[in-house]
Image (cartoon, rainbow, N blue to C red):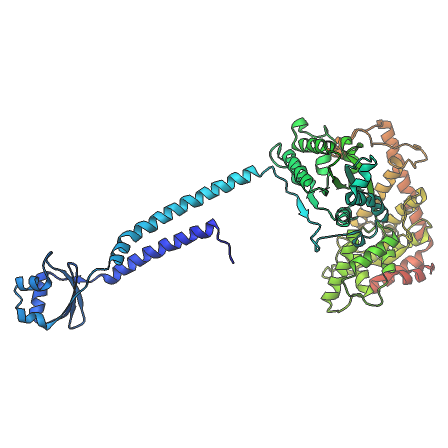
Length: 607
């Protein structure tokens, strides 16, 4: 049944007023007829032209024998017969027409008299009531401006409940959080022995690693209400609103305790104080101050735990991270090969996979993928299968979706001429051949000249294992691989194109990190440069101050240039020594457009 609102009632009054006005106009037009003078009526009665006269009060409704109608007025206080006789109509002539006396209805009289007034009055009252409701609603909204916007997931909500079995790839983090679940389930056991209740849990990790899902799983395992909101939802245009919402949030959570408050992207309000432009009156800082006060003000009996997630723990205010506030810091890393396989199993449960799909092989081919990336990967494979009219998702669909997730969609309508295709083929062949010839470079899985995303072609290299430590030799070989396309173009065509611009940018970044961040320069030694005195709020490029001299900066540039030139020379030597393989790879790419891992291994002799 539809719920009536003030708007519906107002519309009803407007429609009623319109109908009454329209009816009045129409009825008046229908009743309009020609009026006869009483002397003219007497003449028509004497002539025998009148068929019927209807008397209603002093008004006469006259119908002639030809069907025409007229109105007239009789004398007040006298009957129709007396009036006609007084005007010279013989008594015998009165019987030639039908004479009807019609008493006016009291209801119709009062309705005609009062209905316009009642409708107008009702319209005015309705309009005043509607406007007062609008003012009242605005007042309520202004009063509720400082109330929390947190969304609560009830423990009884089966559709939204998440448990640890729904989360894969974060085994260490789950073990760390089981203590929180145990406390929320059995707080008395901890309180009796004098254990202090953990105030907060900070989940730190790369985007898409499952921090929010993990927080929901803690609430689902413990069976407690889960209040979720983003850090940006505290900050409004007016100073003090965020702090008010923080107070209201903690007040509501304490009433529902035991409960969990989850603040996603806490760095939006938890940045280091004093780094911004607004000083102490900054709305973000006021909100952070209130969070610090609320977390510090928990009673020992308050069974409320604050969980927060961020991928930028380095910029958080130290007051947030001290003991008594965020007591637990849980690192949520990118999944390794076994964890990726487990995540793929969860996301493919509701999808029909063909028998040829090996999730372990897919996990091997997706190093560096987060949980969100893997979910997107399976979804893209399902979309590809559905577009092809398949009933099942086969392994080829998943492999195609890997390329799409990493490099972007295939640009089938993008046509390049033969010369550009040839240059692209030698460029990608240069990357692939240098990678296959260096011991510390990642193995080549696929080479293609099919345009994807913004690239005319691509060489897909994937590590054979999950790497956590990177050596100087690995970085130098990767720089040489990145310069392989640049070297191949110069070697074969004696010229260079803009196709190597992104490769040069990546190679230069690696070379500069070798010198400035990792202390791997043999000339400058184990020193890092340029990471002190950074103003976080203003950004690293604008707010960073150099902690080295101009002479050192010159040496850094010289060292970076020497690394790049050495890597380029290494790539050029490989291409000269294996020119026949370079031309063979380029020829096959021009013909077939794509070379997979096994075929490439046979060509370069590494199979």
